Image (cartoon, rainbow, N blue to C red):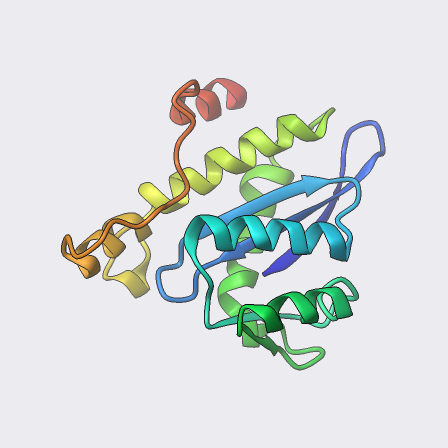
Length: 178
């Protein structure tokens, strides 16, 4: 779990909260807003747990929202261990830092957004492509969804980030870049 800060073209600052699965490299959740407080973080985490189930642990840095008592109380209820990286050592959460770089280069720096919903649509398109099309070397050059389906071998269905059927993500990205 991590945050990225950015600014819209009208100088309004916003933040992006995102969660990546360590095992599958799957982008699980992304929320954007001008303010992402510890209460909002807890609500987003509750939605993710209700949708996908409770993780054993969450790895993150020591940001003030992430070390809040509210978050600590919430994860204690679900028996989730909070695993904080050491200050000044982002490589301890390298998977998240890699996702941050991709999101920054491929979405946030690539387009000039005037509203948060525009940025959110493009970020979700990027998440969908990462989960369903982009191969990862650590997953034997398979996308996360393919990797998970092979690992489960039909034992149980899992919920993944679902493509909005109203949008053709490839066309959306292609049209915005041309």
